[in-house]
Every structure is written in structure tokens, then in C-alpha cells.
Image (cartoon, rainbow, N blue to C red; front, side, top):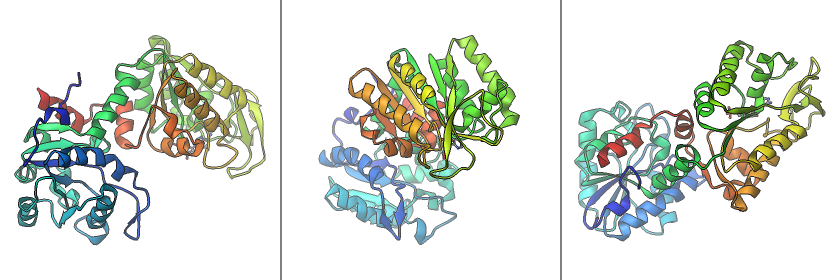
Length: 400
Ligand code: AMP
């Protein structure tokens, strides 16, 4: 049983004002939504509550406003949401105060209202108790469906859960269930694949993973730092030489926890960082002084595939090479396709997310085949780092 309450624990929302924190931080161009993925993810919760006669009041942030401004207004998003939902969405120009109250009072059973950007009030990010109380006065119940904002202790993501009966929305519920299958209660053996540019941005993440997973594949630019720390010459490859002691500490820790570390044994090496650059495969002990490792090589991909074959669970963050510039996308694409195949065959639970990972898996054409691809960005990374997420913790505390 989940350690937080869900919409199933609201027996009859009819006539109740339900404050629902959602993620509507969608990319836009000239006020038009260019990717509605996040809008689509909030629809199940809205439909559930409105369909049962709840009065749905949506709270969300948009961008990083430095005060009130047209550029960061949620008004155009209300129209886009209404279109995807197939029914009207009202809008109020503030999330607290008279205008918000009037709009909420006028909302019929089954109606949906979007309130203006919560971050137009600095008290939102400050998790100000008086501001949280003002928000709470607009609702009878609180639902958090914004996992992607759960790493922030803001008034609408954390404070409210302590003031009103609090529940996880459908998308939050699905995300937490998937993440639990990935690391908290996974089927072993578990393999983590971590790639990307730098070790410096992923130290906490690597330290958490070596304590939890059976094997850790390290790829991408960050693998060069490990290879350098182990005495290899990585030529002109991206490499954080000052982090060699950190890399060695992580390797040492992995030995203690019995986590197998898989580093590249070969790489696609070029002398310039650009699409189509001439390249050749080199073993990691034979990188030319002017060469740059821009992708893992074919023998390394074979190793990664073999580890995936032996695993029941895969957690993936970060590309294995400079996947934006062909042909240095090859290692990432091949390993991702292999993981997708194992997932389709029912042999693997695969959970991925964070930063460029979604783009890399989309590029490989396998996002739909993975068990779960999180679009949560920062919240997903903090989860991978093993940090408690304030928005989730508050939901757990609300269950008691
Ligand atoms: P991150 O945001 O840390 O996951 O890093 C993703 C970035 O790492 C992408 O833009 C990749 O191009 C880059 N990257 C991955 N492997 C390499 C590499 N071997 N050399 C340079 N950049 C890389």
C-alpha cells in the first residue's frame, strides 16, 4: 500500500473545492504551446475530480518570474489546457485575494479554474505561512500532481499539504510507483547507467547509486575523468582532472558495497567536436594525445548490453556520448534500443529521466518502450541522489 493518500481516498469530491498543484511549465513560442506533454499529464487527475463533481482549482508556476509580467502569465495556458481537456477552463488573474476568491466562488460542480502563476508572489518560493494560509482558504482539499516541482519546499508544493487534507494526483502516483520499482523496492540485479558531461554535477548521484545498485555503467564525458583517475591518458577529451580523487573515492566505495563498475574499454575518437567529424575506434589505453573520446566504442556497447541482459531493473540517466552530433549518438542509441528490446520482452523494468536523457531516448526512438521515462528533470535527479523530496514528504506526513 502506498504511504500517501491518492484520489481513491477521496470518496466524494462533489461540491468540494479541490486545490490541485499541477505542472504546466510547458515550452511556448509567441504564446503558443510547442510541446503539450506536461498538459496531457495533468488531464487524468482533472478528469477524475471534475468527473465526480469536484470544483477543480489549479495552481501552477510558469517560468522564473522576477515579479508580475505578461511573459510569465499562465493565461494562454488556460486556453491550451481547455483545448486538450475538451471542456472550458476559467482563468483568474491572481492566485490569492479577491479576484481568486470570486472566481473560486463562481466555480460550478465539475468546473475547472486555473489561477495565475503562483510565483508572481515571492512568498510562494519562500513557503511563507501566511501566503500558504491564503491559498488554503480557497480550498477544502489539496491534491499534488506535480512531481517535477516536489524537490522544492514552496507554499503550493509543500506548505499546503500541511494545511488541508492532502492527496497525490494520478501522475504523481504513477511517477512514485515507477520510481519505487526503480530503486526503492526493485527486482535485483539492478543496473544503473550514468552518462553525461561531467562528474562534478553528479557526485551525490553516483555516491547514492553505488550504495544501492548491483552494477553501475559509467559513460559519456564523465567516464574520461574516471579513466584519467585510473592512470589512462585521455588526450584532449573532456575531463575534470581535479576530480580524480572524487572518482577514486567512488570506485573505492563501490568496492566496499560490492557494486560492479563498468567503464568504457574503447571509444569513438575524433580530433574535433562537430557533427560528422572523422573518427576511429580506439582502446582506452591507446587514445592519441590530440584525440577526443566523443562516444563509447562497439566493445563497450557489447559490455553494456551484456550487463543489461543480466539485470531485472535498469535506471538510466545521461547519454553515453555526445549524442546531439552524429555519429557520436551511436553508443547511446544502441544501448537504449537494447534496453527497450529487453523491456518489451518483459525481462526488464527500465526507468529513465533527468536532463538530456529524455531527449536522448526520444532520439533513439525508444521512450515509449521504456517502463517509465520521467520528464521531471531536477526532481528526478534529486530522487536519484537519494534526497527526500519536500513535496512527497509532506504527502506522506499528511497520511500520518
Ligand atoms: P548531462 O546534462 O550531464 O546529462 O550531460 C549531457 C551532455 O553530455 C550532452 O550534451 C552530451 O553531448 C555530453 N557528452 C556526453 N558524452 C560526451 C563526451 N564523451 N564528450 C563531450 N561531451 C559529452
